[in-house]
Image 1 (tube, one colour):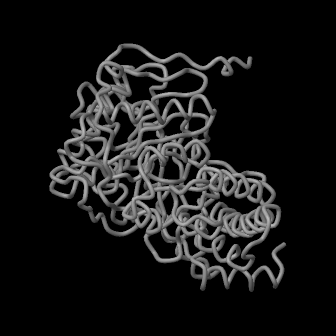
Image 2 (cartoon, one colour):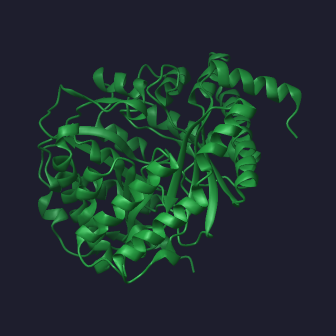
Image 3 (cartoon, helix red, strand yellow):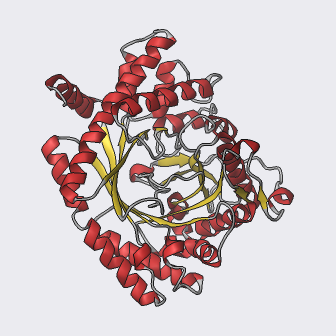
Length: 454
């Protein structure tokens, strides 16, 4: 049970420290919507989404109002669309029609994003996978609420470099296709390694084939709460620092557990996981970078940054797993540049580079996230960045991702404004040396030796 003191403490975290439930995401399996006829498949998809998620937004708003807990986003994730459309899609344009159907359903449901216009190609691409991937630029250009992801590797299978090379081209094509909106389509496209089946956060969310017909996953975020807790113990030793983060993460997770169980009960959908991720927003006081500064860094990127982030990520996970038996998804600390004002400040101060961010991704929850780069960055360079992050995920048995935005028409020294939760970002320089001969090789990078655990 949650006692009175916990209720009062939670109220303070909500009112003063930016605690929120970042998202309630309903995962819905669309495997039974497949049909050899495209029109029938789209009709099945639309009907099932409205049948399962029709009350999602209203229920989230009711819980938020009754419990006084901000629930920022209500979202839906689906079975990777390349599996659903395999029987009826004969060309990329057919997948664009599925994307339009998903977008129409998302608007009707009132959710802000729908994830799962995705393909899982960690060992190879089927014709359906490749068609979906090639449809992504157009699909993201003609829809508003669809998010796309492609998983190109895993610890168990290695990295599909053919898919990596193709994704470099797709990111560039998506940037060009949405250039009138500062290449916004790329903000809804992420390339992953070791993608989890139960992640509630966009743009990488999809409903894995290991999941049931429908499930409720909740993502909780509270970087402001952690920052405030640390500000109360200035100069404390590392043991005290770690215990404070762990206890705070425990409290945050309890809030998510309460919301998840209530949403599950009201919607009649099984509860899946709590994702406890310190996911920042552009709001002042809601920054992972500010936590790192509270720990003792002048700016993220300073010497010691990777160690501080490793400490933070580990203690967040330890606190979360004590609060809930079903912590999953990505859980830890996110370091998106455009969505975190402290990270933006660090880039503008010259403290933080893409290379340092890459080192930080070895110990955080995801990877190179929401990074704006010059529009003339080559497809090969983007593929090389994707390959580097996938290698970090593969070798370290963790999820890594790249959400990079080559902003057409802009260069280093300029900035781009996305608005809302996506924030704004300075254009960061990319290493100019060529890697095209490397990413141009065919085939896949094999799985590491420690993957053989059977």
